[in-house]
Length: 149
Image (cartoon, rainbow, N blue to C red; front, side, top):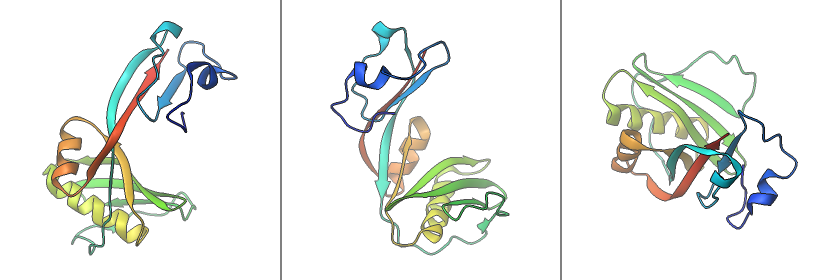
């Protein structure tokens, strides 16, 4: 995973096993790993927002099987999300729904905000999920690319 926008291909690949199955998360979408035998697995957009919102009705924290206070799994029976804390940020990931996507984003955002009050919420999305996130108050921050060999 790249941690700086000026990382070079050599710096990223040095010291990792680049055999088939290797994946690289280009956090800034600026590397070209094609010459090294990698293909783009997917491209997405980083998103973020502040959320001081009450927990949406029906959302509840799932059993705490992780035993880790930096991770929380939430569900409302139709949708679910994983919240995680990394330093001064709350991550929103693994959002799924069998219902309305905008309802799921509103509820998931409220669940992550309830997990880690006062922290900005971040994640990355693409396609319909990106569109729904932007409709629900998130801001697009920049590209992300995942490469697979």
